[in-house]
Amino acid sequence: MVKYVFVTGGVVSGLGKGVTASSLALLLKSRGYKVFMQKFDPYINVDPGMMSPYQHGEVFVTADGSETDLDLGHYERFIDEELNYTSNITTGKVYSSVINKERRGDYLGATVQVVPHITNEIKAKILEAGKSSNADVVITEIGGTIGDIESLPFLEAIRQFRGEVGKENTLYLHTTLIPYIFGSWELKTKPTQHSVTELRSLGIQPDILVCRTPKHLDESIINKLSLYCSVESEAVIEAIDAENIYEIPINFYNQKMDETVCRMLGMDVKKINLKEWKELINTVNNLNEEIKISLVGKYVELYDAYLSVAEALRHAGFKFNKKINIDWVDSEKLEDIENLDKVFKDSKGILVPSGSGSRGIDGKIKAIEYARTNKIPFFGIGLGMQLAGIEFARNVCGLKEADSTEFDELTSEPIIDLMIDQKTIPQKDGTLRLGNYPCSIAKNTKIYKAYQCDNVLERHRNRYEFNNKYLDLLSSHGMVFSSKSPDGKLVEMMELFDHPCFIACQFHPEFKSRPTKAHPLFAFFVKSCIDYK
Image (cartoon, helix red, strand yellow):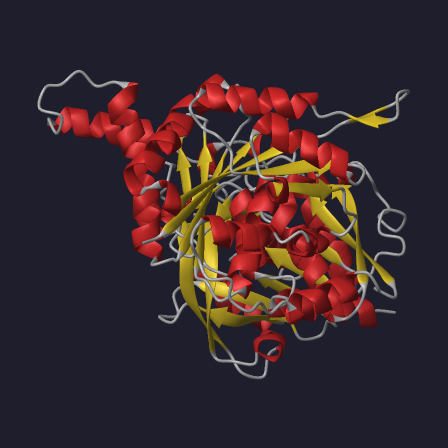
């Protein structure tokens, strides 16, 4: 029987439910269990694919092409497992499914209601996650905070779920806040008590409390929480603030949280292997040099818009024992700056990530030209690759009108254009080239040196592609198209030979980077930044 752990949050948002869930998953996986993770989001959007990065941060894409919440990036980076379409369920998805069933007549004319129809659909999604993954344990994070109206159907569903699969197969883990009050200099348990009371009023008694706190909880506080919240004292876990996020699983391990979970779910407490993770923590805590890399984007006010890119840069830094200092450069502001020397002073590399829309494009192109002409290591991702092609066509090949039809549908030189099979699709949602696609790599290229193999699978999220009509022209001026789709129709990666590191890719390598296993392209780029003089 699959075991199910439900992670809820109380008091305030931003307590780290996702990191808590990921940390528990890491510990259980390290004990030899197959773990799968899932996030329930209460918003009515079907997925974050059509949402502004300012609203939601980045869109994380799974291997099967699902556009999901950025928390799934945390999940994958911690447990190094590929998630899928069952891993991110929104209110929009649930209601869409129920409405479609009602329209087909599946409910035989019944009045469709939140209970039982919506809650049954949610429970079906939980069961589907267990079946599709063949996991021993499914960990499901419930988005939002206890008391939010929009989360109520999900909470009711997991309450019902225990009655259907048994108490021995379900566990409720509740994350809360223990504030430290200035003046009285005390840790206060009352917010947690109120949060648990609210959870109980919905029919859910938490089995484990994970308490976010700035200071260690003494025995008296743990006993008080145990008494007032009806939770075993061993199941009151402190989540003390940590500068290094990778220390959190070890903190939980030292408090035997994973052992408590195993005992409550009737699972064997298998021998654990945390050697690799402890080595990572030691590396992160002893980085010996800081490397400044400029990330040029138009959403830099919200770092979460480029969360996976930033993490992948840091992972590559770990590989070489360097701390990556990201300089967040607003591409829109670059458009009014003539001399970029001051902007990129002391920068060892320039990265232009993906994006959409015309705002800030000229600033990104200026940054790419600066990196190319000054021989500064450059890495373009998605739109960053497309703009590298446009910049090269304009400034090296002499095509002054070179552009993308995304920005100018009537451009006379469409270096970047819609994929042929996209031109007849009016709908934007879910119609991009999404998920894993194979890429063939040419030998004797920098890209091949990075990967050390002929073929790779990489995650895509794009609608526009390099226009093959311009391949020969750009090639004749020195651009190397080092990777294409296996059929040769789509450009996947390109580079310049006469540059220490000028590489770009159509896909999103950041989604496959791990803290213990840096992505080859990020590793190649960061190593070039380290070597740059």
